[in-house]
Image 1 (cartoon, rainbow, N blue to C red):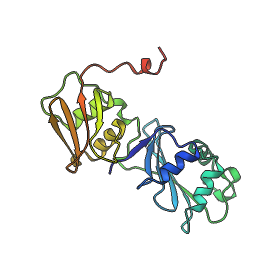
Image 2: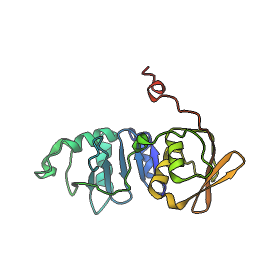
Image 3: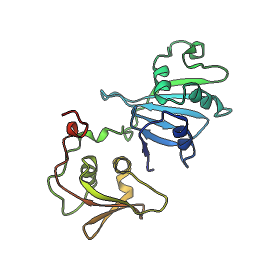
Length: 218
């Protein structure tokens, strides 16, 4: 499955666009988490920076998605506000007695650790080193290194109705590389998913710009 990457979920329009997706299941860049709203429960998986297993919160009701939706709206459509409230809950007591998130009725909240090996945060690519030269034969590792360090140009979608970003492609390759194929068309690489062309681009082995410079820090 190709997991989409969204910058944030911090207003009503962003949440509505998320929910209208065929699969409301996306990685969020800020704060780093996986949001899953495919059932009546809202599931949030929070990635830790210290290599601990991600924390997973599941909240809602079996009868309807309305309680979870009311919670989102009650937190002013801010994913950050929801996460802040969840992290302050005392799970050693009845969380419904805690008014921090306005929990009431048949809403339940559960917390556990997610230890799935293929669950990667949006910045999991940070340890991939750039390519020094373009390989004769492209492997999954070489493609991931190229994408992680933005060593490409002229990115183009090859599938109507699909707009796969470089970050989303990187995560897809890291999670299910065996479902992807790569082919050359002149100087371009074409990436296919289960035989369907998805994106194409021109690989470029030029060293990536320093990340601190990109952020305007130096």
